Amino acid sequence: MGVFNFETKTVLLNSGYEMPIMGLGTYSLTDEECAVSIAALLEAGGRLIDTAYMYGNEAAVGQAILDSDVPREEIFVITKLYPSQFDNAAEAIDEALEKMGLDYIDMILLHHPGDGDVEAYLALE
Image 1 (cartoon, one colour):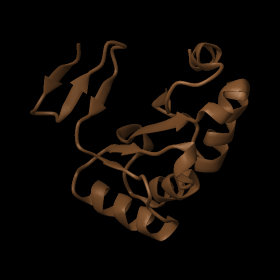
Image 2: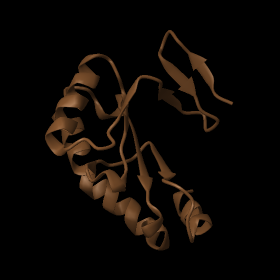
Image 3: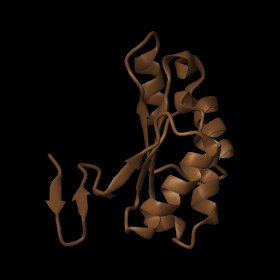
């Protein structure tokens, strides 16, 4: 179970990493809406951004991060693999990194269960 620190506005994950608790989910945001929303989030002090392959805006998320004045290491990025990607999870992870133009992703989740989810999970590890 995570430990919340309301002074730093983070939660300590079981992995030992701290995850910001103020963030933005980007579901259904178009590229322009996504960029404006992320800029507003970062300006307001939020540091968690959640996207997914199926949202179709990973590139916009990455560009907004790169366009910001906030150092990358201060931003916690989550994306998700969709079941249609489970057969080639390692390739899908590389694709997400390339789309976002980032060197790393802080957390990758399986969007929901599907055929090959165990193998996909092992690729995430």
